[in-house]
Length: 226
Image (cartoon, rainbow, N blue to C red):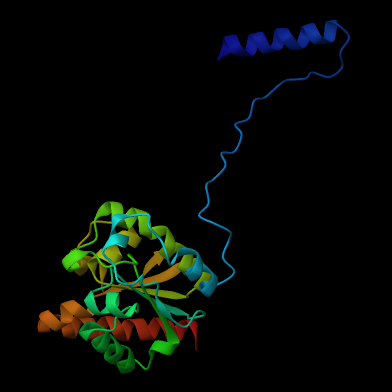
């Protein structure tokens, strides 16, 4: 450190002795790396859908029937996020339209919401074979689409439906039981976690805590929209 200071001092003195009243130095700056974009910046959800609906970035495109983009209010204050389309969703091209979707409608109605009030999407846009859990590489490929949807919608609250969507977005391995029942912060957006409707169909004991989550969701929503 002292050696570097001495060298700098000597250099400046030499410049003065030579008659220069300013000292010029050359600083090398790293040039910004150009980012490869998937296409032009979308003007809205419809524009974005048409940009990505024929996606073939991962192998799931070869087994899907439909690309399941998401559905609902493009200006929703509340966004619900599941993990991946199931059989009925793949056939119809809409999220949460099977038995779990019907239960979700009832859950929303219980806290005075309808599908027209919210936007529903999934981490993955294509159905994994046999409804297996999404794989890390599939999540990594498809997650940017979801992030762009959130950016376009600008919700005030996000509710993750199930363990996988909660862990992916919160970037944690904590179990669902530790994540639900509280308010998280996700990039400045209020973030709640509850059980996936499909889990509630299989395990009746989860319905009571899920109801508590829904009441918490409604209370937080009302705080933002009195």
